[in-house]
Image 1 (cartoon, rainbow, N blue to C red):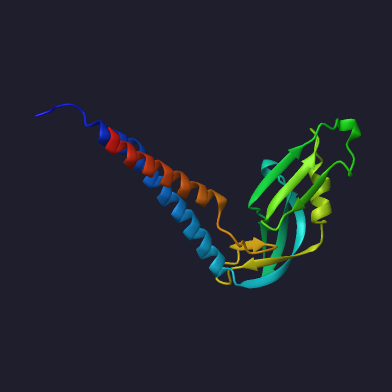
Image 2 (image 1 turned 45 degrees about the vertical axis):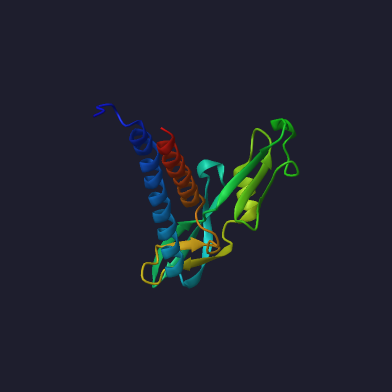
Amino acid sequence: MDKGVNVGLVVFLTLAAPGLAFMLAGILILTQENRKKSRCTAMTTGTVVRYSFVNGTPSPVASYTVGGVSYEKKRRFRGVVEVRTGISPKDLTGENQSCYISENDVVHIRGGAALNLRAMAERLYPLGSSIPVWYDPEKPQRAYVEKLPVKGSIVGWVFVWTGLGLAALGILLSFVF
C-alpha cells in the first residue's frame, strides 16, 4: 500500500476548490445585482448635487426625494477606459481632453498627465441638472442613477470565468498527475 501523497488530489484541491469558490462568489454577485435591478421599478427625478472622483472616474451624485425623505446616490458605470496622451500640462485645453459615456455604460477619458476631472464631470452632468433615478419602492435607498444596468456586473463575470478556468485546470491536472 502506497503511503505517498496523492499529487492529483493536492492539485485538485489547490486549483479546483478555489475555482469553485470563485464561481460561487461570481454567481452570488450577479444574482444580487439582478435582484436589485428587478426591485428598482419606480422612477423619480433627482438633481446633481456634487461629484465623486473615486478611482479617477467623474461620477455625479444625485439627490432625490421619496415620500418626503431625501436620499443621495452616486452614478455607477460599468467600467472606465483612460487614454493618456503626451500633452504637457501647459498645453492642456478643453479640446485636448474629452470624456464620454459609451452605449456599454463605460466612461472613456482622454487627456494628458494632468486631467481636470471636475471640468469633465461638469460638462457631462452640470450641477443642479435633472437626472432620472430608478429606486426600489420598498427601500428607496436602493437605487440606480440615470439608467438601469443592461448587462451584469463585470466583477461578477470575472469571478465566474476565473473560477471556471481554475476549476477546469484543477480537474484536468488532477487526471494528469
